[in-house]
Amino acid sequence: MAFNPSPRQLSAIKALVFLLALVPFGKLVWLTVSEQLVEPLQYITRATGDWTLYFLCITLAVTPLRKLSKWNWVLKLRRMLGLYAFFYGLLHFTTFLWFDHFFDVQEMLKDVVKRPFITVGFIAFVLLIPLAVTSTNAMVKRLGGKRWLWLHRLVYVIAPLGVLHYWWMKAAKNDLGQPLLFVLIVAVLLGLRLWWARTRAGAPVRT
Amino acid sequence: MLIKRSPNGIDLPFSSEITPREVFEDRRRFIKQLALGSIAGSALWEMANREAFAQGVNPKLAAKLNPSYSALDKQTAYKDATTYNNFYEFGTDKGDPAENAHTLKTRPWTVSIEGEVKKPFTLDIDALLKLAPLEERVYRLRCVEGWSMVIPWVGYSLSEIIKKAEPTGNAKYVEFVTLADRKQMPGVGSRVLQWPYVEGLRMDEANHPLTLLTLGMYGETLPNQNGAPVRIVVPWKYGFKSAKSIVKIRFVKDQPRTAWNVSAPQEYGFYSNVNPNVDHPRWSQASERRIGEDGFLSRKRKTLMFNGYNDVASLYSGMDLKKFY
Image 1: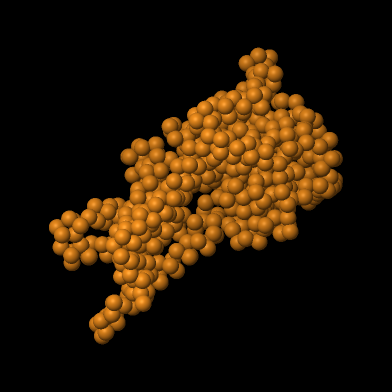
Image 2: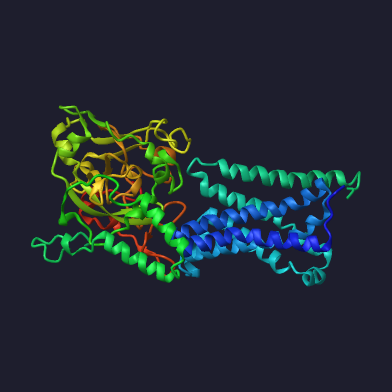
């Protein structure tokens, strides 16, 4: 009953997801090159921040989707999706370093220390780095599956930190609709895991 | 000193020396197209945009340049100044006002001058246009968000109106009440701010000749998204102090409860003078990006105290501007 793609179909799906995930980036490049943005760096900062959060949520949704739909193959997309979260996060951080500080690292760090919403965002970004670095098969082997898994549970901290970063950024404008949506989504995605962790002891999850 | 005051006017640009906008824009477009390899699609896109936000759509407004109150900075492109706006009555995105403000009806329009005055009165737009000779003044505009523009406004000093109203001794502040009509303004009703949007100045600030009652920009009447038909421009304060689409000018005893100050008092003070030494809680105010100039390849430029309008410093002598931000 559950859809189960052949290896060829899976490659096609992977290629499609890879390209789709590049669309926001392509759009940014196009808007910038064709000079349609009045304040390009500002726009890019916002857009890359948004897409980092989207990809964090999408990545966190893979396991619940797999469990609920029995589509085990979606797990094969997770690494790519997670790396895209890192990709957009890296772009976001780079534009901040560029836009706000013109690559003056010391000034940037002062800003990180001084402003809590940046501190939180910065921590989230730094925590993403080990996950990106250890995303290869070789690294999984080197670390050993269990340790690797524990390390990658960092994402349960990273996503809430990212949402908090966004929340504080928006807080002053009484404009919390969107941050609230992220809170709900991340709460559901993490809540499901808690729920499953509790029930797992009794009945093993059938796949 | 950035306000050039040259009695003989020799080092000031005469309007005849300024490259006409069409020529300037055409040149830019030509270069842009070359750079883009003259991709037909992009050229068409540009032209379509130019149509919608072109100068020349609004009626012309004749005014004489006032060189004593005009900055020599390079002026911001008309298109940028009219498509990148904060005007929350039409939405919170910068592009929203240009997209949505066409529903604003700017005629008939009246402004009532009331409160602690000996002679309250109401003026319609035509009367406002004739109240005093129109001047063109090129002001720097510094947004609290960290970007800036340079805009040629058309108007006259607010003091012209204050004189006519004859404020009483009780008038310590001026309050600007702006239009809040849900039918015309889709953003009114959002919970971001309290409506109507209210701004205010202390009497001496309002009377300062730099404070401009503004009816036009770039030689034309104000586009809706820039606060048509009448707004205030206070160049030494952050942009949000310059209320748009004003319907009431009230003279009051107590400090007005201004929109952003009510919404987030720890971030936006009543005074909100441009001040590189007082940070916004979430970002530094020491520098700014000039729209259309400071881009990918340049550092932001330093923000000047009072946005470079040092004339106004005397209004605040003895005040702790860190406290009264």
